[in-house]
Length: 401
Image 1: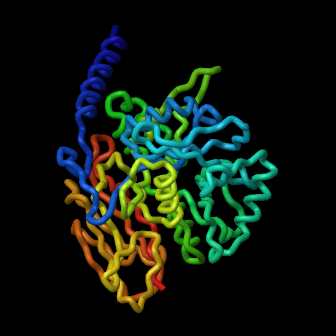
Image 2: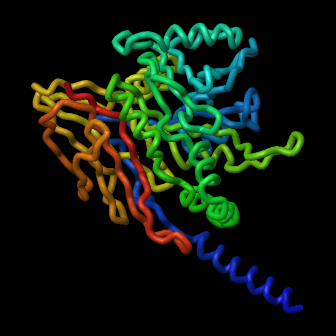
Image 3: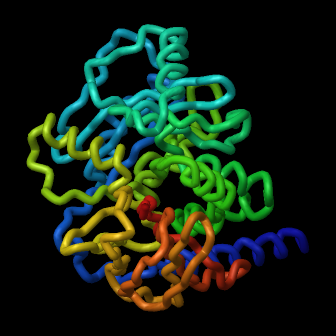
Protein backbone atom coordinates (compact mmCIF):
# COMPACT_ATOMS: atom_id res chain seq x y z
CA UNK A 1 0.00 0.00 0.00
CA UNK A 2 2.84 2.39 0.88
CA UNK A 3 4.50 1.76 -2.50
CA UNK A 4 1.19 2.46 -4.20
CA UNK A 5 0.87 5.87 -2.50
CA UNK A 6 4.49 6.72 -3.32
CA UNK A 7 3.95 5.78 -6.98
CA UNK A 8 0.66 7.72 -7.12
CA UNK A 9 2.30 10.81 -5.62
CA UNK A 10 5.13 10.59 -8.14
CA UNK A 11 2.72 10.13 -11.04
CA UNK A 12 0.57 13.10 -9.99
CA UNK A 13 3.67 15.28 -9.53
CA UNK A 14 4.97 14.27 -12.96
CA UNK A 15 1.63 15.02 -14.60
CA UNK A 16 1.55 18.46 -12.97
CA UNK A 17 5.11 19.06 -14.19
CA UNK A 18 4.07 17.86 -17.64
CA UNK A 19 1.16 20.32 -17.69
CA UNK A 20 3.55 23.14 -16.79
CA UNK A 21 6.04 22.03 -19.46
CA UNK A 22 3.31 21.81 -22.11
CA UNK A 23 2.68 25.56 -21.73
CA UNK A 24 6.35 26.54 -21.71
CA UNK A 25 7.40 29.11 -24.32
CA UNK A 26 11.10 29.32 -25.20
CA UNK A 27 10.78 31.06 -28.59
CA UNK A 28 13.35 33.80 -29.06
CA UNK A 29 11.01 36.00 -31.13
CA UNK A 30 7.31 36.81 -30.89
CA UNK A 31 5.42 34.59 -33.35
CA UNK A 32 2.24 36.64 -33.05
CA UNK A 33 3.79 39.13 -35.47
CA UNK A 34 3.78 38.11 -39.13
CA UNK A 35 7.24 37.44 -40.55
CA UNK A 36 8.52 39.44 -43.50
CA UNK A 37 11.18 38.78 -46.12
CA UNK A 38 14.41 40.73 -45.64
CA UNK A 39 14.57 43.88 -47.75
CA UNK A 40 15.59 43.04 -51.32
CA UNK A 41 15.38 39.25 -50.93
CA UNK A 42 13.01 36.31 -50.63
CA UNK A 43 13.58 33.75 -47.86
CA UNK A 44 12.66 30.16 -48.79
CA UNK A 45 12.84 27.43 -46.17
CA UNK A 46 13.77 23.89 -47.11
CA UNK A 47 15.18 20.50 -46.12
CA UNK A 48 18.11 19.01 -48.03
CA UNK A 49 18.44 15.56 -46.39
CA UNK A 50 15.51 13.16 -46.02
CA UNK A 51 14.96 9.43 -46.52
CA UNK A 52 11.82 7.54 -47.53
CA UNK A 53 11.06 3.81 -47.46
CA UNK A 54 13.00 3.55 -50.73
CA UNK A 55 16.07 3.51 -48.49
CA UNK A 56 16.28 4.00 -44.71
CA UNK A 57 13.07 5.91 -44.01
CA UNK A 58 9.69 4.72 -42.76
CA UNK A 59 7.19 6.34 -45.16
CA UNK A 60 6.82 6.75 -48.91
CA UNK A 61 7.75 9.99 -50.61
CA UNK A 62 4.18 11.16 -51.18
CA UNK A 63 3.41 10.81 -47.47
CA UNK A 64 6.62 12.66 -46.61
CA UNK A 65 5.67 15.45 -49.02
CA UNK A 66 2.42 15.86 -47.06
CA UNK A 67 4.42 16.05 -43.82
CA UNK A 68 6.67 18.70 -45.38
CA UNK A 69 3.65 20.78 -46.29
CA UNK A 70 2.36 20.58 -42.73
CA UNK A 71 5.78 21.84 -41.60
CA UNK A 72 5.43 24.83 -43.97
CA UNK A 73 8.47 23.98 -46.06
CA UNK A 74 8.96 25.72 -49.40
CA UNK A 75 11.18 22.97 -50.83
CA UNK A 76 12.19 19.42 -49.97
CA UNK A 77 15.05 17.36 -51.40
CA UNK A 78 14.75 13.58 -51.05
CA UNK A 79 18.18 11.96 -50.62
CA UNK A 80 17.82 8.19 -50.83
CA UNK A 81 20.82 6.13 -49.71
CA UNK A 82 22.40 3.92 -52.40
CA UNK A 83 19.22 3.87 -54.49
CA UNK A 84 19.84 2.42 -57.97
CA UNK A 85 16.41 1.21 -59.03
CA UNK A 86 15.11 2.28 -62.43
CA UNK A 87 11.87 3.27 -60.74
CA UNK A 88 11.25 6.94 -61.43
CA UNK A 89 11.31 9.33 -58.49
CA UNK A 90 9.05 12.29 -59.05
CA UNK A 91 10.29 15.86 -59.12
CA UNK A 92 7.96 18.82 -59.45
CA UNK A 93 5.52 20.88 -57.45
CA UNK A 94 3.50 19.04 -54.83
CA UNK A 95 0.81 21.70 -54.39
CA UNK A 96 3.02 24.63 -53.26
CA UNK A 97 5.95 22.44 -52.19
CA UNK A 98 8.90 22.22 -54.60
CA UNK A 99 10.10 18.58 -54.51
CA UNK A 100 13.58 17.66 -55.78
CA UNK A 101 15.63 14.45 -55.85
CA UNK A 102 19.27 13.97 -54.87
CA UNK A 103 21.32 10.92 -53.88
CA UNK A 104 23.35 9.84 -50.87
CA UNK A 105 26.09 7.30 -51.59
CA UNK A 106 28.47 5.24 -49.49
CA UNK A 107 32.00 6.26 -50.39
CA UNK A 108 35.05 4.85 -48.61
CA UNK A 109 34.04 5.10 -44.92
CA UNK A 110 31.74 8.09 -45.42
CA UNK A 111 28.51 9.17 -47.06
CA UNK A 112 28.45 11.71 -49.89
CA UNK A 113 25.30 13.54 -51.06
CA UNK A 114 25.14 14.55 -54.71
CA UNK A 115 22.75 17.40 -55.52
CA UNK A 116 22.69 17.13 -59.32
CA UNK A 117 22.44 20.14 -61.60
CA UNK A 118 21.03 17.77 -64.26
CA UNK A 119 18.00 15.90 -62.95
CA UNK A 120 18.17 13.41 -65.85
CA UNK A 121 21.42 11.80 -64.68
CA UNK A 122 20.93 8.35 -63.16
CA UNK A 123 23.49 6.04 -61.52
CA UNK A 124 23.18 2.34 -62.31
CA UNK A 125 25.16 0.94 -59.41
CA UNK A 126 27.59 1.52 -56.57
CA UNK A 127 30.61 0.85 -58.81
CA UNK A 128 29.63 3.66 -61.17
CA UNK A 129 29.16 6.07 -58.28
CA UNK A 130 32.63 5.26 -56.89
CA UNK A 131 34.22 6.14 -60.23
CA UNK A 132 32.12 9.30 -60.53
CA UNK A 133 32.90 10.48 -56.99
CA UNK A 134 36.62 9.70 -57.27
CA UNK A 135 36.70 11.87 -60.40
CA UNK A 136 34.75 14.89 -59.11
CA UNK A 137 36.43 14.87 -55.69
CA UNK A 138 39.87 15.00 -57.30
CA UNK A 139 39.11 18.25 -59.11
CA UNK A 140 40.57 21.56 -57.94
CA UNK A 141 38.27 24.04 -56.22
CA UNK A 142 38.84 26.41 -59.16
CA UNK A 143 37.10 23.82 -61.36
CA UNK A 144 33.75 24.43 -59.67
CA UNK A 145 31.33 21.54 -60.03
CA UNK A 146 27.89 22.22 -61.44
CA UNK A 147 26.75 19.58 -58.95
CA UNK A 148 26.90 20.20 -55.21
CA UNK A 149 28.97 17.39 -53.67
CA UNK A 150 28.50 17.39 -49.88
CA UNK A 151 29.91 15.29 -47.07
CA UNK A 152 27.03 14.04 -44.91
CA UNK A 153 27.24 13.82 -41.09
CA UNK A 154 31.07 13.97 -40.94
CA UNK A 155 31.32 12.64 -37.36
CA UNK A 156 28.40 10.24 -37.23
CA UNK A 157 29.27 6.85 -35.72
CA UNK A 158 30.69 4.54 -38.38
CA UNK A 159 30.84 7.27 -41.02
CA UNK A 160 34.01 9.31 -40.62
CA UNK A 161 36.23 10.62 -43.41
CA UNK A 162 39.90 9.63 -43.18
CA UNK A 163 42.76 11.63 -44.66
CA UNK A 164 42.83 15.04 -46.35
CA UNK A 165 39.55 16.56 -47.49
CA UNK A 166 39.62 16.85 -51.32
CA UNK A 167 38.95 20.15 -53.08
CA UNK A 168 36.15 18.63 -55.11
CA UNK A 169 34.16 18.34 -51.89
CA UNK A 170 32.32 21.64 -52.15
CA UNK A 171 29.87 21.08 -49.29
CA UNK A 172 29.72 19.67 -45.75
CA UNK A 173 26.88 19.11 -43.30
CA UNK A 174 27.70 21.41 -40.41
CA UNK A 175 24.52 20.46 -38.56
CA UNK A 176 23.10 16.95 -38.75
CA UNK A 177 20.18 16.29 -36.43
CA UNK A 178 20.68 12.55 -36.22
CA UNK A 179 24.33 13.02 -35.24
CA UNK A 180 23.30 15.52 -32.56
CA UNK A 181 20.84 13.03 -31.08
CA UNK A 182 23.42 10.24 -31.22
CA UNK A 183 25.87 12.43 -29.31
CA UNK A 184 23.20 13.36 -26.76
CA UNK A 185 22.50 9.67 -26.09
CA UNK A 186 26.19 8.84 -25.80
CA UNK A 187 27.01 11.74 -23.48
CA UNK A 188 24.04 11.45 -21.10
CA UNK A 189 21.55 8.62 -21.42
CA UNK A 190 19.65 9.91 -18.38
CA UNK A 191 19.10 13.33 -19.96
CA UNK A 192 18.07 11.70 -23.25
CA UNK A 193 15.53 9.49 -21.46
CA UNK A 194 14.15 12.55 -19.66
CA UNK A 195 13.56 14.16 -23.07
CA UNK A 196 11.64 11.08 -24.17
CA UNK A 197 9.50 11.28 -21.01
CA UNK A 198 8.54 14.93 -21.58
CA UNK A 199 8.19 14.53 -25.37
CA UNK A 200 4.39 13.90 -25.22
CA UNK A 201 3.93 17.15 -23.26
CA UNK A 202 6.21 19.45 -25.29
CA UNK A 203 8.01 17.75 -28.17
CA UNK A 204 9.94 20.85 -29.23
CA UNK A 205 11.29 21.45 -25.74
CA UNK A 206 12.25 17.76 -25.50
CA UNK A 207 14.27 18.05 -28.71
CA UNK A 208 15.76 21.44 -27.85
CA UNK A 209 17.24 20.33 -24.53
CA UNK A 210 19.30 17.60 -26.23
CA UNK A 211 20.54 20.00 -28.93
CA UNK A 212 24.09 21.23 -28.63
CA UNK A 213 26.22 23.37 -30.95
CA UNK A 214 28.19 21.22 -33.44
CA UNK A 215 31.66 22.39 -32.35
CA UNK A 216 33.62 19.61 -34.09
CA UNK A 217 31.74 20.14 -37.35
CA UNK A 218 32.26 23.91 -37.18
CA UNK A 219 35.99 23.43 -36.59
CA UNK A 220 36.15 21.06 -39.55
CA UNK A 221 34.23 23.49 -41.76
CA UNK A 222 36.51 26.38 -40.80
CA UNK A 223 39.55 24.20 -41.52
CA UNK A 224 38.22 23.31 -44.97
CA UNK A 225 37.38 26.95 -45.70
CA UNK A 226 40.96 27.92 -44.84
CA UNK A 227 42.00 25.89 -47.92
CA UNK A 228 39.06 26.35 -50.29
CA UNK A 229 35.49 27.61 -50.16
CA UNK A 230 32.95 25.04 -48.99
CA UNK A 231 29.19 25.31 -48.51
CA UNK A 232 27.77 24.47 -45.06
CA UNK A 233 24.44 22.61 -44.90
CA UNK A 234 21.94 21.63 -42.23
CA UNK A 235 20.98 17.98 -42.62
CA UNK A 236 17.73 16.86 -41.01
CA UNK A 237 18.58 13.26 -41.99
CA UNK A 238 14.88 12.55 -41.49
CA UNK A 239 13.73 8.92 -41.33
CA UNK A 240 11.03 8.94 -38.60
CA UNK A 241 12.52 5.64 -37.56
CA UNK A 242 14.16 5.35 -34.17
CA UNK A 243 14.08 1.55 -34.07
CA UNK A 244 11.93 -1.23 -35.41
CA UNK A 245 10.16 -4.42 -34.41
CA UNK A 246 9.42 -6.38 -37.55
CA UNK A 247 7.74 -3.98 -39.94
CA UNK A 248 6.67 -1.52 -37.24
CA UNK A 249 8.65 1.59 -36.35
CA UNK A 250 8.90 3.93 -33.40
CA UNK A 251 8.45 7.16 -35.37
CA UNK A 252 10.53 9.51 -33.24
CA UNK A 253 10.64 12.24 -34.21
CA UNK A 254 8.02 12.36 -36.97
CA UNK A 255 8.89 13.77 -40.37
CA UNK A 256 6.76 16.84 -39.66
CA UNK A 257 8.55 17.38 -36.35
CA UNK A 258 11.98 17.00 -37.91
CA UNK A 259 11.11 19.40 -40.74
CA UNK A 260 9.63 21.94 -38.32
CA UNK A 261 12.55 22.29 -35.95
CA UNK A 262 15.44 23.01 -38.34
CA UNK A 263 16.07 23.91 -41.97
CA UNK A 264 18.14 25.74 -44.57
CA UNK A 265 16.92 29.23 -45.51
CA UNK A 266 17.75 30.10 -49.12
CA UNK A 267 17.92 33.80 -50.01
CA UNK A 268 16.91 34.71 -53.56
CA UNK A 269 16.86 38.06 -55.34
CA UNK A 270 13.67 37.08 -57.19
CA UNK A 271 10.75 35.00 -56.01
CA UNK A 272 9.83 31.48 -57.06
CA UNK A 273 7.21 31.60 -59.79
CA UNK A 274 5.77 28.07 -59.87
CA UNK A 275 7.69 27.19 -63.04
CA UNK A 276 9.43 23.96 -62.03
CA UNK A 277 12.60 24.09 -64.14
CA UNK A 278 13.24 27.75 -63.38
CA UNK A 279 12.60 27.34 -59.65
CA UNK A 280 14.67 24.15 -59.46
CA UNK A 281 17.62 25.97 -60.99
CA UNK A 282 17.21 28.92 -58.60
CA UNK A 283 17.23 26.75 -55.47
CA UNK A 284 20.12 24.51 -56.55
CA UNK A 285 22.18 27.48 -57.77
CA UNK A 286 21.69 29.24 -54.42
CA UNK A 287 22.64 26.07 -52.49
CA UNK A 288 25.71 25.47 -54.63
CA UNK A 289 26.86 29.06 -54.09
CA UNK A 290 26.16 29.18 -50.36
CA UNK A 291 23.48 31.89 -50.62
CA UNK A 292 21.64 30.67 -47.53
CA UNK A 293 21.84 30.29 -43.77
CA UNK A 294 21.23 27.39 -41.37
CA UNK A 295 18.64 27.75 -38.63
CA UNK A 296 17.27 25.89 -35.63
CA UNK A 297 13.72 27.06 -36.31
CA UNK A 298 12.39 25.63 -33.05
CA UNK A 299 14.04 28.63 -31.33
CA UNK A 300 11.98 31.05 -33.41
CA UNK A 301 11.05 32.05 -36.95
CA UNK A 302 14.17 33.75 -38.43
CA UNK A 303 12.45 35.08 -41.55
CA UNK A 304 13.63 38.64 -42.02
CA UNK A 305 17.19 37.83 -40.95
CA UNK A 306 19.84 39.08 -43.34
CA UNK A 307 23.63 39.04 -43.42
CA UNK A 308 25.25 40.70 -46.39
CA UNK A 309 28.33 42.63 -47.39
CA UNK A 310 27.92 46.03 -48.98
CA UNK A 311 30.67 47.37 -51.25
CA UNK A 312 30.62 50.05 -53.94
CA UNK A 313 26.81 50.30 -53.89
CA UNK A 314 26.52 46.52 -54.37
CA UNK A 315 25.18 43.92 -51.94
CA UNK A 316 26.63 40.41 -51.58
CA UNK A 317 24.99 37.39 -49.96
CA UNK A 318 26.78 34.69 -47.93
CA UNK A 319 28.86 32.50 -50.22
CA UNK A 320 30.08 35.51 -52.18
CA UNK A 321 33.67 36.60 -52.79
CA UNK A 322 34.48 40.30 -52.42
CA UNK A 323 37.75 42.16 -52.99
CA UNK A 324 39.21 44.05 -50.06
CA UNK A 325 39.96 47.06 -52.25
CA UNK A 326 36.19 47.55 -52.66
CA UNK A 327 36.10 48.65 -48.99
CA UNK A 328 33.48 46.10 -47.83
CA UNK A 329 31.11 46.60 -44.89
CA UNK A 330 29.34 43.74 -43.11
CA UNK A 331 25.67 44.29 -42.38
CA UNK A 332 23.61 41.96 -40.15
CA UNK A 333 19.99 42.42 -39.12
CA UNK A 334 17.83 40.13 -36.97
CA UNK A 335 14.12 39.81 -37.81
CA UNK A 336 13.14 41.11 -34.35
CA UNK A 337 14.88 41.80 -31.06
CA UNK A 338 14.98 38.44 -29.22
CA UNK A 339 13.06 38.06 -25.95
CA UNK A 340 16.17 36.65 -24.25
CA UNK A 341 19.77 37.82 -23.99
CA UNK A 342 21.47 37.17 -27.33
CA UNK A 343 24.76 37.52 -29.18
CA UNK A 344 25.61 38.17 -32.82
CA UNK A 345 29.05 36.66 -33.35
CA UNK A 346 31.41 37.46 -36.21
CA UNK A 347 34.04 34.81 -36.97
CA UNK A 348 37.12 35.46 -39.08
CA UNK A 349 38.98 32.39 -40.34
CA UNK A 350 37.24 30.28 -37.70
CA UNK A 351 38.13 32.50 -34.74
CA UNK A 352 35.66 34.68 -32.85
CA UNK A 353 36.46 38.21 -33.96
CA UNK A 354 33.73 40.33 -32.39
CA UNK A 355 30.45 39.97 -30.48
CA UNK A 356 27.47 42.32 -30.66
CA UNK A 357 24.34 42.56 -28.54
CA UNK A 358 22.30 44.68 -30.95
CA UNK A 359 19.70 43.37 -33.43
CA UNK A 360 21.28 45.37 -36.28
CA UNK A 361 25.00 45.88 -36.85
CA UNK A 362 27.41 47.30 -39.41
CA UNK A 363 31.13 46.59 -39.36
CA UNK A 364 33.95 47.59 -41.69
CA UNK A 365 36.09 44.69 -42.90
CA UNK A 366 39.72 45.72 -43.15
CA UNK A 367 41.44 42.33 -43.55
CA UNK A 368 41.26 39.46 -45.99
CA UNK A 369 39.74 36.21 -44.81
CA UNK A 370 36.68 34.01 -44.45
CA UNK A 371 33.87 35.62 -42.42
CA UNK A 372 30.77 33.89 -41.09
CA UNK A 373 28.03 34.94 -38.66
CA UNK A 374 26.43 33.02 -35.79
CA UNK A 375 23.52 34.12 -33.62
CA UNK A 376 22.83 32.51 -30.25
CA UNK A 377 20.28 33.06 -27.47
CA UNK A 378 20.07 32.06 -23.81
CA UNK A 379 16.53 31.13 -22.74
CA UNK A 380 15.75 29.74 -19.29
CA UNK A 381 14.44 26.18 -19.57
CA UNK A 382 12.38 24.37 -16.91
CA UNK A 383 14.22 22.42 -14.26
CA UNK A 384 16.48 20.51 -14.35
CA UNK A 385 18.09 22.59 -17.13
CA UNK A 386 17.93 26.31 -16.32
CA UNK A 387 19.76 28.88 -18.48
CA UNK A 388 21.69 27.62 -21.50
CA UNK A 389 23.17 29.14 -24.64
CA UNK A 390 21.70 27.76 -27.87
CA UNK A 391 22.98 28.50 -31.37
CA UNK A 392 20.09 29.74 -33.47
CA UNK A 393 21.50 30.86 -36.85
CA UNK A 394 24.67 30.10 -38.82
CA UNK A 395 25.49 31.79 -42.12
CA UNK A 396 27.65 30.49 -44.92
CA UNK A 397 30.95 32.36 -45.12
CA UNK A 398 31.86 35.46 -47.10
CA UNK A 399 35.33 35.46 -48.64
CA UNK A 400 37.24 38.73 -48.71
CA UNK A 401 40.36 38.58 -50.88
